[in-house]
Image (cartoon, rainbow, N blue to C red; front, side, top):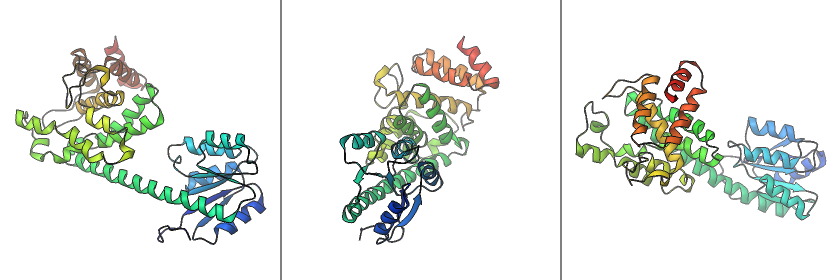
Length: 335
């Protein structure tokens, strides 16, 4: 029997338009402690996945549209379901069928007639991989909770992380960034200031200007945040954003004094939305600015060489497309 946690039944979705194939696969799988659900066509399979994502899918290829390849591709292109392992079951062992499956994103293959021992081995292996993936996602969730806990130390920053995550993804889309970079921007929205967990509240909440010594402590937070997240491979694209979102286009930022395009684009994107949101928010040392005032300050600081002009312009254009008074204000500033 497959070595899996006893406290939870893995949920396996079996998809085939032939009743005898469904019954055979379910009979093979029922010797294990799995929860088996069935779908008799591609559309029903997609509905099942949307309602309750399974831990693994056994997917026939020869079905009325959408066929197995189309279903596989749709699941793998969705950021919420792309990590579900999919085994494509086909009557053909030809290279062309496997290539189509690989292009659709399939994780493994079985050829009919299915042999029980081979089915057991492939299903068990992918369920273990899914378990490890879920554990990594849980760790990511803990880090996000820590980021929100840091935010909660300052009541004036409530909602800051969520706004940055949303702004960052919107702006990243305007630059045509791929899905994994958009995911990194969303995570970085919550984790960019995680290193402030090491900054005393007397500094974080100080209502007056920080001393040079206090600024030195504050400036450590990008490096501290990077170190906290560094052991996780899933944070590979997030780490540069955490470390470099306080660099400046002219090289006057921190911690590494990077300049120009040596600053990762994702860090430049998060920097702009972070500055804008900080200007809009009331803090212990300042009142919150109106949208027009915040945009004007952002433009003035950008003219000093602090920010990437292209990212600033794209951010203004993004706000211009939002409608309402903010659209009018940003359009006026762009002239």
